[in-house]
Image (cartoon, rainbow, N blue to C red; front, side):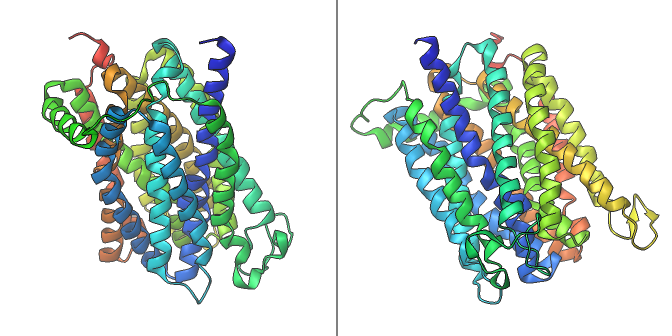
Length: 446
């Protein structure tokens, strides 16, 4: 493949991260989640509902991820699946426009959110499986890190656009820049903030164009007769053989817990800040800008660290940082920090939580980029899509666990602070299992 063609293909692959990141940035964490708190009025009730809704989507993802990966390996056409799940992404995101104050159906809203989330996760599974085709093994870490950094920048641009021109303050009806919401959107009906769903869908449609123009699946071929039966048989064999590869088995188990914990932090960071610190959607958005900038810079630097030291130590350091962050979150409120009472009106919790946002963005971005590099190291090159299906399963087999645990803990205690404590235990389990992972994985030869 000519260098110019490969370079365009890599950039096309990068654009998937740019196009898809706003679902995480705008919907899961920084705009729509705190808006749900504003709709429902009660932070604990909103956090519980959010947890149960995301948990339900996680169950569907966990059940389907390895099967779809196996089918793609058998049929060979990954692009077909990316088109399908891209459509789900767009439909799910656009449907969030229906979250109108005083006239919304929470079950319908969460259903649309789940459809889009499932589409995003599975589209990501199939694009991740293309990573080994983009360069030699020694370059994969750098490419993965750069792609994640590019995606973070996309999320940042989308967030700034949303805050500056659309997301309206509940009291003033103005955006962060002091404008009325663009396109004549009515702030009284919160149309500016609700536009986050359609904007995310439009953003994805526009910026997936380079991906579909420049990326080609080198493994594409017609699916043979009996492909479904063969895929399921091969998947069963893979699952039976999995414990024989101790390193891969340990890595998938480790990733299952630490990625679930990280996703829990992402999913509940915004709604937590809105409920515990009483931040507005716009304040949470500023928190998001800080987190994304830190994440983009760290993902770029983490790619270099990955290339130099390998993904395993990078993953271990990131899990350690995020565990400490989880402990800190539980101990911070408007009234006290780490057990020390604060004077009324103190800005220290706000400043500290902004710093925590930077740490989550930085460590989280590096962790995710290094994790998919580690998966390339651990997987059988001949069955990479199926391996990334298992990788999605490891990240999503318990993806319902963190949200459901947070939802249940919040409901049981009536406290958003205690409600997020399960992520600490999940991180520690992931760190412990990482001890059994060989740094070079499938290529180690031992």
